[in-house]
Amino acid sequence: MRVNERIVIIGGGLSGLTLAYLLLKENIKTTILEASPRLGGRIHTIKGVIETPLELGATWFSDMHPNLLALIEELGLRKYPQFSKGISLFQTKSFEPPQKFFVPEAEMPSYRVVGGTQMLIDTLFQKLPQDTVFLNTRVTAVKEETNGIVLETTGGKAREADKVIVCIPPQLVARQIAFTPKLPDGINAVLPNVQTWMGGAIKFTLEYDTPFWRNEGYSGMLYSHAGIVTEVYDHTNFEKNKFGFTGFLNGAAASYTPDVRKEFVLRQLTELMGEKALKPTAYFDKIRTDEFILDGSQVIHRPHQNNGHPLLQESYLNGKLFFAATETATEYSGYMEGAVVAAQSIATRL
Ligand SMILES: Cc1cc2nc3c(=O)[nH]c(=O)nc-3n(C[C@H](O)[C@H](O)[C@H](O)COP(=O)(O)OP(=O)(O)OC[C@H]3O[C@@H](n4cnc5c(N)ncnc54)[C@H](O)[C@@H]3O)c2cc1C
Image: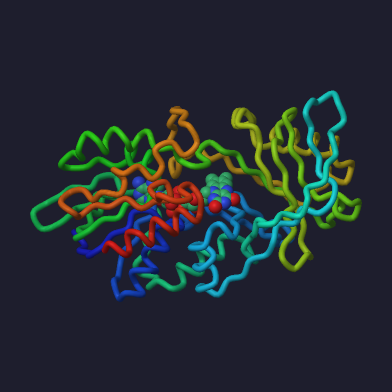
């Protein structure tokens, strides 16, 4: 059986959902096909044991991101500045005490979304007709036929569309989607070489029932060249009644089991911040190499390599196929701002 839909969006991350929302405002209904069991892609807020919103994906933005800020406001969401007051730590060597420093108040602070970045995704989803979003639906092939496009998905159900907008990282397009007829050589050469922002990153979060570092004059900010943890930031919620850290682990940590990663993280933080760090209420981490972001690609690119490439701005299959993930944006590609810019750009063209 084939289902006919006018516009199909591949990918239910920020770019795909923003595009669907913008088009709906113009009375254009779309269908979103999302490979994973959840919406949000690289935005992923979870709740800790005591319900602290913890970010395993995108977290910060600033006044340099006007399109994202406008979307946040339009959706009725709120922002608050990242806490950075107090003593910060820089660990250069494992056998020397960390250096202490103060970060002056930023002229342009980093913000977080009140309630967690996932609020953006959940609110966009609530604005859409719920029966137009399909989870667990990976697109594997896009074929141009006389009357339009046919999409093949896992599960075997083919879908017809007049236009298709691909809102997944271009590198993933090259690995997962077969096009008939083949796309031109130029774009085929570019797709696998578009760096996917944060592909391979390992983000971790910790939840605590007290902000022991704040109580002792520390900002919670920590940088290290000497351990499994490379960056840490205070992760207290807007209401200041739930506490924790978020940060990044060294890429090599991917080869350890989750339990070993947790043990090494707690050991390093206890050395640097004292015994109270040893007893979190929750620890989570997420390695970004899975089929929803890199799909096992071992290729290492320069940060933002080929992001916003001119060939990603073109349409293909006789004007029926467009690309719109954050990596296609000509400004702030890779970031949430880029995802919104890419969606706006395609919405205007459609
Ligand atoms: C750890 C981490 C930290 C980050 N921190 C920040 C930050 O602090 N600030 C910031 O601005 N940005 C940050 N980012 C980047 C930010 O998350 C992205 O810019 C933004 O979320 C990208 O949205 P997108 O919709 O373009 O792509 P994605 O979020 O990657 O969405 C693509 C979606 O497509 C789905 N998909 C993949 N393949 C298929 C297929 N074949 N068929 C159907 N669906 C498919 C995926 O499952 C996914 O849901 C971070 C990213 C990560 C991973």
